[in-house]
Structure formats: structure tokens, C-alpha cells
Image (cartoon, rainbow, N blue to C red; front, side):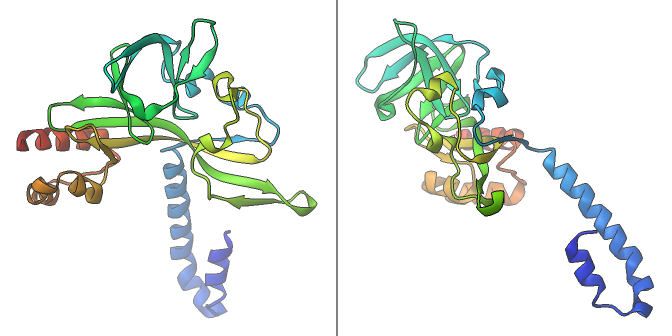
Length: 253
């Protein structure tokens, strides 16, 4: 039985115990069921100290496409470059194979207007996001990425302490280890796979989906958006709700 339940029980004397035990046990099992259900919503993996990341995550878990696919990078200056490309969920980077056959990461991302790979379009705005729906006024995009959920440092007597200050796997990047997936960590980390949603305007500026940032992105439509959100329950982590919201936003322009 968890410590918090025991602490609660000792507040009651023996005569009161029978009256509170049954409800507490019921609450305990309800919470256990809720915890298990919540854990099913995310994918967690632990990378142990000295372990190669590529030995824990499969290529299908790291890369968006099953193999490097022909794509094109369109730059803001009007030029274009083509290569076989793939998106790394692990490091939030777009990788490409150069003429020598080496796998490299795109640099100078802010010079990129957009990237077309297969039937997909990616934009860069403090990270790569893939377009789900698009019209002239509003865009809905997603980012599938591994984030650091916990860092476990080895302390004295081989004990572990947890910290959560780092939220991006890119923090652990060292040179071309990103491309080869051969990054070996010197501390235990727990990774969580997330799907994040972003909403963009006609100028291709994107914000993480949420009420506050949405109103900041479309200040002229603030009243209409607030009325919509009052009349429609929107979960900003659900794709279906966001697709309905972006269709509504598209009608405002």
C-alpha cells in the first residue's frame, strides 16, 4: 500500500478504521487503474548509461520515413536543392545524403522556406513541423519527436537521482553522431515519444496549439475565436478537434 494511504490511515483510531477502510481501498484501486490508463497514452524508453541510442530505438522509431526519400529544399533566396532526405524524430533534424554518400543534417535552417519530401511539406520554425492541413489563411502542423522525460544521474554509492531540466534530446548531440545514431550517453535518460500540434498563419509563423498563443497569432479574430471555443470543447492535443478549429479559422478570412 502506498505511503500516502498509510499516512492517512494513521489519522484514524482503531474504532474508525472499519468505516474508512473500504472507501480508501476503493479509491486506491481507482487511482491504480487511472495511472495505468494514463501510462498507455505515451511511449517511454530508458537509455542506460553507456548504451548506444541506436541499440534501444529502432530505425522506424527514429525516422519518419522507412527509408531516405527524394526531397527538395526551397530556400528563401529562391534557390532549390534536391537530395534523398529523412526526418529524425530523435533530434528534430532533417537529414540528407550528400554526393559522397554521407548522411548529414541540414544547417542554417532559418534560410529554408520549406521542404518537400514525398507528398509531405515541412516548415522550420524553431524546429521542423509537418503540414497536416493548409489553406491561404491558416495551417495545422504536427511534430513527432522524442523528448527527455527524466535524467538519472549516478550519485554516491551508485544511487540514482532524477532531474528534468533538459527537454530536448538535441542537448546530447555530438557532431555526426546524430546522423549515425551512434550517440552513447554518460547518464541514464528516459525518453517519451510525443505528437505536438502547431497552428500557423499565412506568413508561415507557427505556435504550439493552445488558446493563449492562438489568440496572439490571430488578434483580429480574437472575439470570433473565443466564441468558437466557448461553444465547442477543443482539446489542443487532439488532431480531430484541431482540424475542425482550423476549418473554422479558414472561414474567417
